[in-house]
Every structure is written in C-alpha cells, then in structure tokens.
Amino acid sequence: MSQPTSNRALYGIVAEYADDAALLAAAKAARSEGYTVMDAYSPVPVHGIYEAMGGTRTKLPLVTLLGGLAGLGGGLGLQVWVSAIEYPINVGGRPFLSWAAFFPVTFACTILGAALASLIGMLVMNNFPEPYHPIFNTPNFDAATKDRYFFCIEAADPKFDAESVRAFLKNTGAEAVSEVEP
Amino acid sequence: MEKIGKRGLGVGLVFGVLAIVGAVTQPAAFYQAYLLGYLFWLAIALGSLVTVMIHHVAGGAWLLVGRRIMEAAIRTLPLLAVLFIPVLLGMRYLYVWSIPEVMEADRYLQMKEIYLNVPFFVGRAILYFAVWIGLGWALTKWSYLQDSTKDPLLNQRMRIASGAGIVAYVLTATFASFDWMMSIDPHWFSSIYGPIFFVSQGLSALCFLLIVLVKLARYEPLSGAVTDDRYHSLGKWLFAAIMLWAYLMFSQFLIIWSGNLPEHIAWYQRRIGSEWKVLALLLTLLHFFLPFIILLSRFVKRKAGILFKIAIGLLIMRYLDLFWLIVPDLHEGDFVVHWLDFVVPIALGGIWLSVFARTLKDRPLLVLHDPRFEDLLKKEEGGRHDE
Image 1 (cartoon, rainbow over the protein chains, first blue to last red):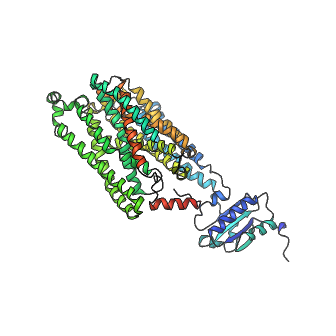
Image 2: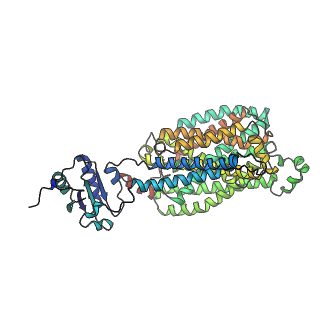
Image 3: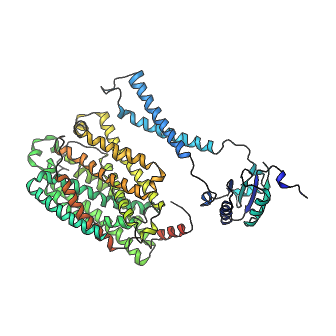
C-alpha cells in the first residue's frame, strides 16, 4: 500500500502519550536503546525529563560570565578614560583615578553586560528567530499546549531507522505514532 | 560530637587559665581580646537565630537538615548572656565614654550622654538578651514539641513568632552593634553599621552550620538526608551573604569617602590610612574576592569538601574583620597585636563549643515530623528535585 518509509525524507517520528509518566518512561527507554537525538513536548514541566533524554549542562553560564566581564571592562574602562585621560576634572581635590567612585558604575555595567548576554545568548542558543519548525506537522500537535505529551525521535539520530523507531515507539505505550515530514 | 565537646572543654580550660593570668596582669589587653572573642562566638548563635526565623517565614527545603544544628547554637544564648558580664566589668577599658573624667572634658560627648551612660547601657543589654533568649526558647521548644506531637499547627505558630522575631532581632542587633562596637569611638557614627553587624552574624552562622553539617553528614541519621541539593542551597546562601557583606562594607566606605568629613573620615584613616591597611586589603581579597570567584561555580556549591574549606576560611576572616573593626580604635590607629587576642577567643570558643555539643546531643538531629520535611523526603524518593 504505502511506499517504503525509508525512501521518504522525514523530520522524525513522533509518539503521543496521555500522561507525563509515560513520556518520562519513553524518554528513558529511548536513551537505553541508544537513541541520542530526541525531544519531548509537554504542556507542563516534567521533572527529570531533561536528564532522562541525556541532556548535558548548558553553556549559557559561560556566556553570562563573558558578558559580565565585558560589562566590567567596558564600564571601568569608560570611566578611567573619560575622567583620568580624556577630560580630567578636579572634583573636591580627589585623584582623577578614584577607583572608589568608579565602583558603583562598574558594578552596574557588569550586571547589565551579564543580563544582556544571558538574554541574547539564550535566544540565540534556542535558534531564535525560527518561524518554521517541522514538529508542527504532527497531527493533533495543538494538544501539546493542553493535555497531551509528545515525544520525537529525530531523523538526525545516527541510529535512526524508520521501521525500528516506529516499532520501538509503539511498544512504549504511545496512543498514536506518526511520521513527520520536514 | 561528644569528643569535640570534651576536647573543647579541655582547650577552653587550659586557655582559660592563660586568659585569667592575662586578665590579672594586663587588663586592658584582656578586655579587648575578650570583646573580640565574645562577639565572634555570639555571632554564630545570633546568626543562627535569625537564619532559623528566616527559614520559618520563607519556607523551603534549604535549612530542614541543618535546623537542629542551628537550634542547638540558639540554645547557647543563656550561656552567652552570662559570658557578657566580663564586658560590663571591663567597660572602662573598652568604652571611653564610661569614664566620667573623659565625659567631663568633652562637650560633644556630653550631648550624647542621654544615650551613652552606664546604667542605660546595662539596661539595654538586659533587654537585648531577654528578646533573643525569649525568641530562641520559644522557637526551639516548639520545634522539639513537634517531634512528639507531630502537630502541623506548630509550623504556623513558629512562622508568626518568626515574623515578629525578625523585626525584634533587627532592632535589637542594630542597637547592640551601636552599643558594643560603634561606641568604642563615641565620636563616630554610621547608620549602616547595624546591617553590617547582623549580616556578618548570618554569615558566621552559615559557615559554622556548613562545618558541622559536613562533619556530621558522615554518620546516621544525617548521612541519608544531606544531599548535594542541600549543599547547593546552602552554598548559594553563603555566596549571597558574602556579597551582601561586601556590598554593605563598601557602601559605608563609599559614602564616607565621598563626604570626606572630619568627624567621619578619622575612623577610616585609622583603618586604611595606617598599617591596618594591610588587614583591609586582606579582608577585601580573602573575605570577598576569593570566595566570590570560587563560589561562582555551580559545581563547587555542590561539593561538601570544598564548601567545608571555604567555611573555615571565612570564619577566620570573620575574626579578622572584627579585629579590624574593633582594635584600631583602642590604639589610636597603631598596629598592635597581643597574644591575648588569640588566647581569649580560643578559651571562649572551647567553652562555647563544649556547651554547643552537649546541647546538640540532647535532641534528635532531624526535624523528622515537620510536615515540610516529610514532603521533602517523599519528593526525593520520587526522583524529583525541587529547591
């Protein structure tokens, strides 16, 4: 009837579940089967799902740190340059290079740099902006924002084979399994 | 813990004898050292009191495993009240305003006499200790009562008492800092001094808690309950407390530095315009920058061994901070370090630790029947990680 699935280009195969426990179990099972490229979609946070999918620590803290250091250097540098080098003004006889007075601005710039780097870094790492995503081709995917739980093993997975993934997902108690086009 | 108690008592007695010899031969040096040591150990007990109250009001899992340790520290407050008596005996060596001849010669001080006089000073101290001991007694009693009655309503009672208690603590600790530390230089004043005093106390108490917790976590019943998540929470607290300390210390400095007024700046001239600046630099680096950079890492905050070392380092820094705040004023800015400055705090510490260890042993180490603790255990069995 249908053509062999392996010939068709696929984004991945998606399973639909009725509760978070089934989703979590599926993620753990997929991990122990050796799959590595997968994602879960849920209307509520599911504790432990990230670890179950073998998620690693994000690099975002490093981005935040670098942003903070840039803010620190920039804020301090600007003040030193302006008040000690480019346009020195005598304020109450204090030295031009008054580090105590520079401290609050430097501190604020550090926070600003770290916050901006976190926000922008987070958006970039999440591929923002991304107007099209294949996962929305999944039938009934709207329910992922209401009461259904979806789990996708993506075709990018080195171990991906449409027949065996389909069989595997059916065994995890999925209520529906569908192939999703890119 | 028993061993620590006995050893503490032994050390306390040996150093106590040395301290008494010092008290007889060099009373001025003795009372200075006594005030230092006294405030150092008082900080742990009072810091524990406010940390436990914050936990009752704010909730969360972070202090559930350590609450009994802090409660034992709180219950040493009556001992600390007794240990305050030598400070009263040595007032004329510590507080120049308590000497009538000094008062008579100084018109500026006469205007402050309505607050700075010996009877009122003693009366205030009695009031502070009454408030602290009363709060500590009620909170530890209810917490213990919950072990046998399992009454969840006790949480409500502890929460209400803590809400009022935090206000009472902040007021009494602020005035205690004015009385016991700030009035050493009666001409100088700083309104941020109170917050510096009680944030430092919270920091001392956290360090002490971490040290005891890491040691006790090797044994039952704490070994199962103290997880990496608990260390992580306490590590974050430690990180926040260091930053708050640095923030307050710097705020005071910045404002006085900017103003550059004679009646304020003298206090800093004694501390950073003299040989004491070495200590100021040391505090900046080791009380703030070094632990700040180490604690930035999430990994470190979850490692008991590293937290233990940081906590010990910070407690030493707490002592040096008190040294920097108190001693320069007593020697007009001259750099003086006396052998009694170390003997007396150790003697006091030995005595305090032995009482602490005995108090801790009296009661179960975990607040097993606090409903929040039961929730926590259930959650962790389910593999969930809530902070």
